[in-house]
Structures are given as structure tokens and as C-alpha cells.
Image (tube, rainbow, N blue to C red; front, top):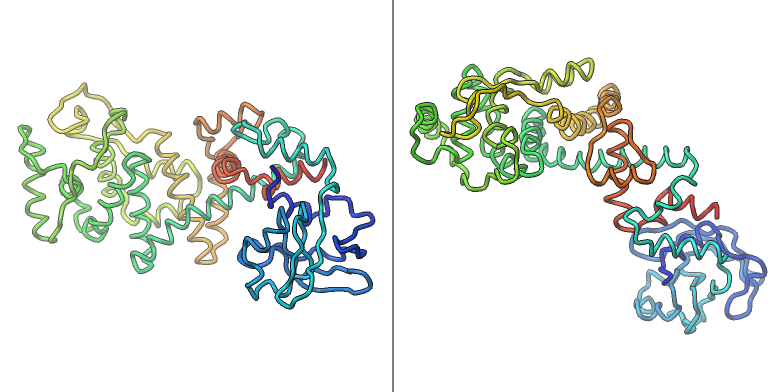
Length: 425
């Protein structure tokens, strides 16, 4: 089935036979300029110029699959469509009378679409492959793929910076506090992102900063506010944490979160929220002025080192309170550190660079993505199966954006790659 979006494509790029064009009223038609594509409310193309008979018209173009849709969409009662000078349709099944009482000139495209173009569109539109253009990917020129993936990366970063903007609005443009909120949310990864964010919002950075000299007090604040100390303990360390939090809670008038919101199921012990909270406390203790340190990092190695923390004391032989385990080093892993940089640091610096007009920060953010290894997941495996193997995080992030926001929605006609495939047919 042909969709209206395909007709938009045909009109924008004149990808139909334009020889001996006639309106359905039998008048000769010449397309001087197709107009500006409008993706919002109103006619589909603005400021077009067409010659109908001996008269040149400047105005708007409206496109439908069937001409009767003009009435179905109630354009006949909408003054926004009074300046439409041409109705472009696949099939003219009903004449259209404008509000002025005049017949609306109509161009019917049925029979004017190249068969090979129509066949390729139908294959793209109905292909059951998870990536619609899988069979055509290698036919796209490298320059087109590269340029479109660059755009996808920027689009992904812009979407991620929406969260940064939200945190800034929440903190009255306090950059350090906003970075703290973003970093905390990313410590939870996908499973515990919500409770980590709620914890950080309920426990301001200024309170934690007052106790940066004491890892014990930082852990008491974080575990207590997370609702993980609201029970009786046998071990002395959690009992001491609970006692300390009781004092700090009243000092700062804190209202702890429910402890049952934290998820442990299907997580490796190294990813338990108890371990992540202990690591977060250690990071805050050892990294005063954390945002400044991140901004000043000269290379990726320095930046990774900022987020490298090793747990000591109680957590050497515990993953959970009162469940002793084999003693082993519990350090933020390289993969986890790289995810923090990719999902928190890079978007934050990208937004910071734009807002503060600091091109050096923008360059740092993009350079770090180019030096980070690509992620490994099922979506990227799909790309690898058609020969699109990312060599760094810059490319993998772009491919993820393309898959989840374009391929999955079958936006092939808006996509630079899908568009190119149809235009070279």
C-alpha cells in the first residue's frame, strides 16, 4: 500500500514522469518549484510555483493518496488551505471545490511512478527484516552513510542533553549539582536508574560535600537515604551506619526513600545497588570539584582514572549487608567506567560546550566518543550482520540512534540512506 509520505518524496524530488503533465481538468501543468516541505500543521508544501495553462501560480501544495481525503480531513472548512494552488494525489477519485467555489487543480500521479522505484519502495516499506534496507545497505555510497551517521550521532547527543537541561532547570542552573544528578542516574545503569535519580534528588550535593572528609558518613547518608538501613542488623558496620544516619537524618530533615524499590534480580553481584552506592560514595570522597576535574581531563586515560575507585573495609568481603562473601577486589570495571563516560560525561560536556560557547568542550566530547570502544549488544549485532561494524563508540551510538528512532519506525523516506537508495534507482 502506498503511503502519503512516499508521495511527498516523489513530489520533493520530482521522481515521477513529468512529460506532458496535465491536471485532471485537462490543463497543461509545469512545475517551476515544488515548494518547501512542511512537516507541521498546514499544507504539505509552502511557497511552490506552478504554471497551469497560461497562468503562473505561487502558493501551497497539498498531497493525498486519494483526492477525497481533502473532505475527510476537513480542509474544505479550514482557511489555512485557501492558498493551495495544486492538489497532488495518487488517485483522483473525487473533484475538490475550494471554499471560494472554484475547482481545485489536481495532478494525478497514478501511472507516472517508475515501476522499479515503486518496487523498491514497496520492498523497503514491507520488508520484515529488522533493518529495512539490509539488502541495499552496501549499495549506498560511503559518503552518504558517513554523513548520515554523523547526523545520527548529533541527534542522539541532543536527545541525551535534554536530560541535562532538565537537571539544570531543576537546580536553577547549578552545573555541579546537575552533573551530580546525571552521574548518579547513570550509576544505576538501566535497572536502577530511577531509584538512583530519586536518591540524588532527595540528597543534595551540598549535604554530601560537608561530609566529604568521611567515607563512613557518606555511606551512612547514601545507604540511609536509599532506605537500606531501615531494619535491624547483626553486623556491627551496618548498625553503626544506621546509628550515624539517624543523627544526620534529623540534622538535615531527610525523608528516606522506600528501600524496596532497588532491584537486585538478574544482576551480577558486582552490579548490585549496594556495591554501586559504596562506589559512588568513594568517588564523591576522592573527587572534590568532580565536574572541574572532568572538564580539565586531557585525555581519555585521565578521565577513566577519575572514575576508578576501589572499595575497602566492609565491602571487601560483602556484596550485601550481612551476607559475607569471598574477599576480592571490588573496583569500578573498565566497561562500567566507559559507560559512565559515554552516557553521562559526554552528553554533559556536549551541552556545556554549547551553552557556554566553548568549542573545546564540544571537541573533547566528540573526541572521547571516537576513542571509546563500541558497545556490544543485540542491536549492534543486527548491524554487524549486514556489514555495518562500528569501530568506536561514535559509530555505535550513531547506529543505535538510526535503528531505534528511524529503522524501527520505518522512516526510510526521511532517512538520508533510504532516500539515497530510492533516488539512485
